[in-house]
Image 1 (cartoon, rainbow, N blue to C red):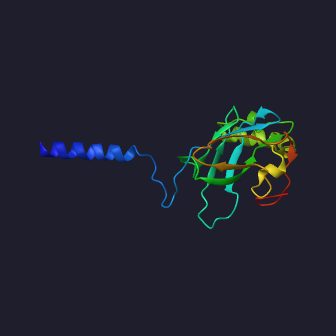
Image 2 (cartoon, rainbow, N blue to C red):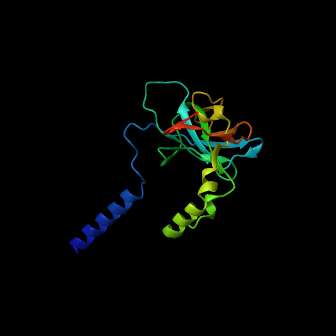
Length: 181
């Protein structure tokens, strides 16, 4: 009977530990809920990566803050992709969204058969080479150093509506590995 009680308590302890979610990193400050609603040309901006960077250097650790907008242009900001909310403070908001433009779409390629995919790529090499990757966001909004978007997160201020400028299709010119002009 003592063994049954011991294992029951042990199982309850394991379940309780697993229900707390991921452990917070050491030194992570308290997080406040943050929801952004992003529009572009008056229309919800869907599928955009949203990142927050401290507006000024504080000498404190910077936490990775961001999320992806849904079909209504709304994004719930998460810290390190796991923890809902952001530390209190003032942040620059910058965005990324790209798409491919061309006479053919990679979505038309066979998805489940590698040999068929390779043949499709060989048959459509010319069209694939003409595909251009474009940014759907004006260049100023894609960098923390140039974005005009800024928010201040406080207990009283947790929902923000932002305008991400006009919709564009600016070709991304690659100048080297990971480098864009």
